[in-house]
Image 1 (cartoon, helix red, strand yellow):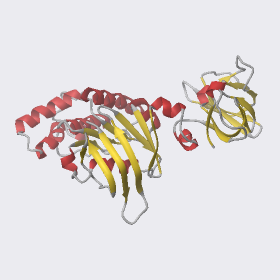
Image 2: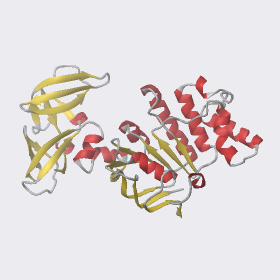
Image 3: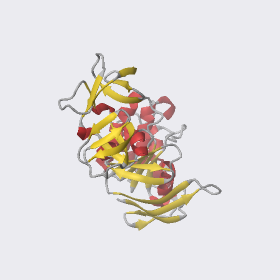
Image 4: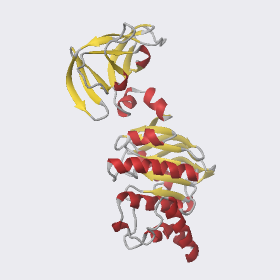
Length: 341
């Protein structure tokens, strides 16, 4: 079941806040993560798809059917909220069965389907427990089972892991992805966690100020962001102002950097992107892009070490597993990305 948005526009009454000109397709069985800073419009986008808000213009289609004016219930979408929204007075199976109850499924069938759904999310034997007696991860699984029990047309996830601690988030990321693939259900996953988006999604959409600014695979988004702002938002990044000095060279504040051939005009202003993990400690095998400096900030993060190497008034941010001293670094030309200034 595909989800398609065609030139969708929405503004909250009395404000200029909303989304503008959204064109987006989520393929059958695809998981699309939507990321962006607070206020970028990502949750508004989910509300429009779900039907909690109604578009001012444009169309929302489910498998080709225009549902832009249908109420929430008639869209038949499974939604998992950040707060889980479980009923505290109901048992686990009763919470899961609630969507079936309002659809007037027979009681015995409701119970059977709810118990089966709980087993699929790893909660067999928890059917009669109430939410307050369960962990955050177990409550999250109940919310997922409830969203999937009535075989929805698509699944919408609104920052479902934000309330969990770091260790449990990793476990639940894998569980959500497993279930999404098992059900082969088109999914829109709203999140502020870039690592979550990159690790789970087939594609990632980035929103800024109510607009979609890039949609790409996780690898493409990280390696080839469309703009400086996206590069700075997705992961750690060295971003330097530069000027094209040759077909394979760019000038930055601390010297010249050899690049892969780029075809940009001489003198063009650019933003130079180098990811910290691509900063090599020591002189490279090729005698280019080697710089000496002084470590002015050093952070031990366990598996990696993140450091700032000062070169005059400039700083190179690097990541390495090396524990020893660092005073020379190098950058391979193919790891230098040039973005619009």
